[in-house]
Length: 152
Image (cartoon, rainbow, N blue to C red; front, side, top):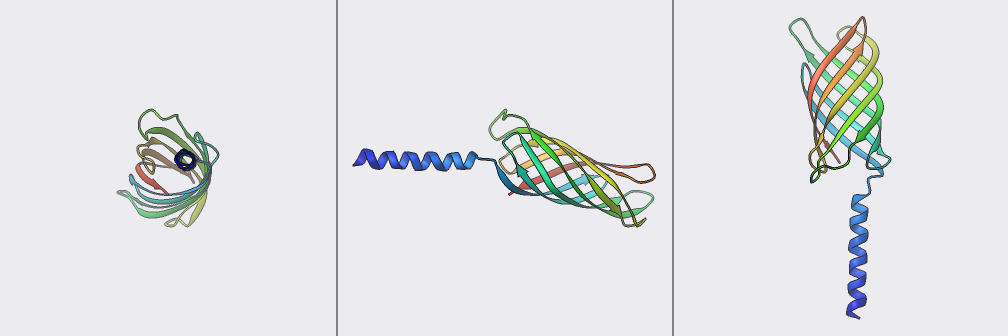
C-alpha cells in the first residue's frame, strides 16, 4: 500500500511540474518604458510553444517629452515574439516585432506604428529590454526606450 501511495504522489507531482512548464495558451503582460518618451503598455500574448508567441494585441500609451513639443501617443499593434533556449536559470533572450496603427494627439493624426524590442527574460515573469518605437507620419518619429515588464 505504501508503494502504491508513493507512486500516486510521484505521478501527481510529475503532472503538476509538467503543467507548470507548459507555455501554451494566453498570458498577459504590463510594461513601462523610459527613454526619449515615457511609455505604459499592456499586451495579450498567445504562446504557441516555448520559442514562439503571438502578441495578439499590444496597446501602448506614450507621453513624448522633448525640447520642442510635449504630446501624447497611443498605438494598437500585433506581432510576433521569439524566445531563445534558456541559457541560465530562468534566463532567455527574446525579440519582438509589432506592427499596427497609432495616433499622435498633439497633431490629431493617425499613422502606421511599428515597435521592435530585444531583451532578456531574467525571471519567470520579469523581463528587461531595449525598445525602438516608430510612428510614420511626415517622416519617421523614433523613440528609444529601456523597457521593464511583468507577465502574468
